[in-house]
Picture 1 (cartoon, rainbow, N blue to C red):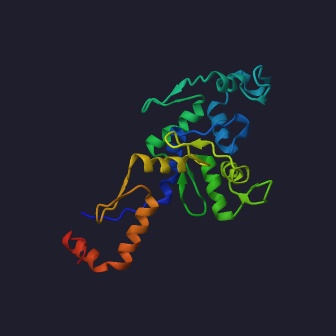
Picture 2: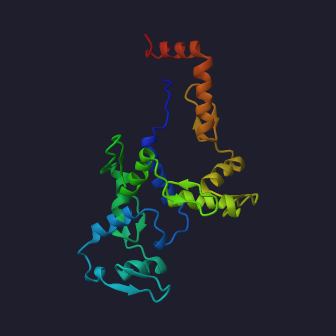
Picture 3: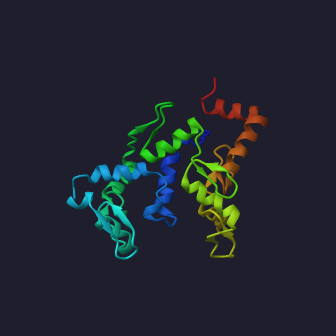
Length: 235
């Protein structure tokens, strides 16, 4: 039975989480976009180690933090002692594992007090709240443009610097974002993962599919009505 399935913005968080897990960009512990996710980690591990309230300098990078030195050293060693029992993905912190498991369980313990949308991560909720408040606390030092999170600021800065760190392995073309590179790769592979449920035509990008459906809705209503009548969904 033909159906129209528009992606709900409420599942964007899970897609971003999965995308980040599969395609992480380099980051450092000192450049956390939002401290709330780190707060979750600290809460999950509070009282688990007597070293957590002391200050330790790292002998490898000099970074000093009032936290557990053992956790910080995992950045250098690559140790990930907390594996997910469902998919096997490993994490350096127990709190990161707890947040990851919400992908599998669907748990969303952080609801928006204004619109009711719930999120799996506290940091994502805080970023969502900026859609309501209009807050853009990360201004560009070159042009003054404000953005809602540090990750977007990093991407924006590439407009000024010209940096294109994501390079196509087949043709050498560079891109400012990994997502754009993945879209580009479909030009080489021919992959078209978004089929139209009305006519069967497949597209490389979801945006192109949505535009196709809008055209059908606006110009071919009799065709749609016949489909609905034949499927028993229109009376």
